[in-house]
Length: 224
Image (cartoon, rainbow, N blue to C red; front, side, top):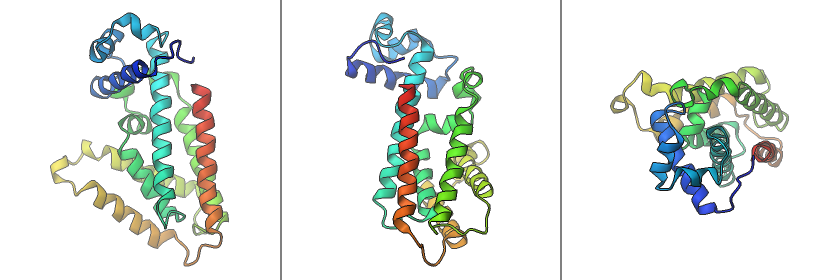
């Protein structure tokens, strides 16, 4: 449902407060009263924008998902080597690392997402399908070796992404190398393993990512 009020500054304030509390305490433990207190507004003011906590959270997912997608695309567009699979994946990891809510959604974090997970079982599956389609298009553009199956590459991307955002559960932060060094090393390894010596159609490769982002925007706007 679209917001009922056009006070964009107040809406943004509500969403910022919601994001902070949900990441810290989880969706189930965050109440509308908590959000109102964090946003320094009345509980009634929240209902001027959102009819329920579920509607608020859907809007928050839409905002954070769009920001994540735009950050990824902008990083790729500004990278001279952005047409390679390794570079695209590198920027995906940077975007994911900068989005705690998308990271929680990706790894299906029960502490953060709580009961919401049971109501949105298809969101991750849709992302996996889109990612696999992107790999197929990149292979057709000559940006990735064709001797590795798209579903296998998609699975490998998932393993690396999940490991990056979940490693804190196993290795304490003080024992980890810098995040940037880890992402750059992953990109270097994938580049050597998967990038052909010559990319036959670099513009088609970059357009494939733009098409993916256009599809993602359409899907997100349908949730708006």
